[in-house]
Length: 236
Image (tube, rainbow, N blue to C red; front, side, top):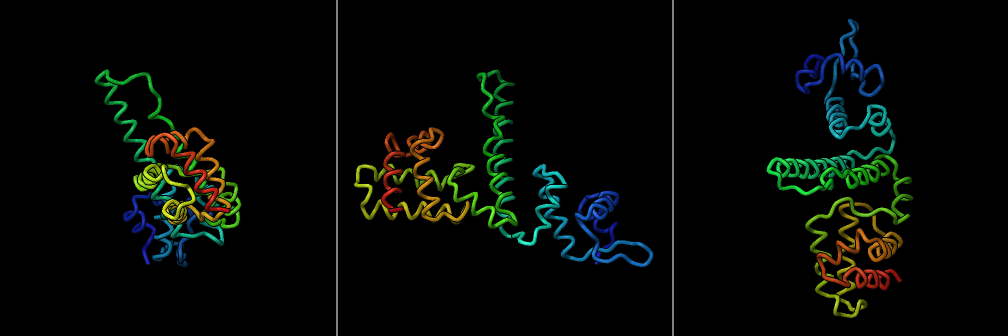
């Protein structure tokens, strides 16, 4: 057990803030002694670490309490999503820093791309739908309206392979195996990707210019259309 003062020294969170977390039922002490002193066990300290991660991501206390207090809260999945969000935040900050340095050297054009929070906000919404709300997230994912919040090197490599295969018949075994690679990657790194979700993504890859332009950029012109048809055959 650690006293409230020890937890404060360990975490950098003030004693007053810890008292406030207790008052709003966000982080209750494990034991309150007869003299009113608060003590925290290991589980409570771990919960504080989770809370601080959400605060680092600018989540309001009310939302944090809602997330961590749900019966179906999945700590492991939440941590994966937090890491992803922090990586997105880091990438965005690096872009802003590079933009500022270019302005300093008077090399930057009139571009506001570095300040775009769209990818970060989209993944934040997706993650919140998943944290502790499995049924809600399944409904969210089944809509097929949201896709990858960031373009990873692995995703770029997968799309590049489709570009190498686009002279083949989209129904060929080699192409269909690559569709399976894509499906598995989405399931492992983003959300469960069943046939319904994958079919929706296939349509979006072709019709949504944000995605088709990226796919054609890494795979060559026509890759997005080829991929959409390959997915359609795979999902039949």
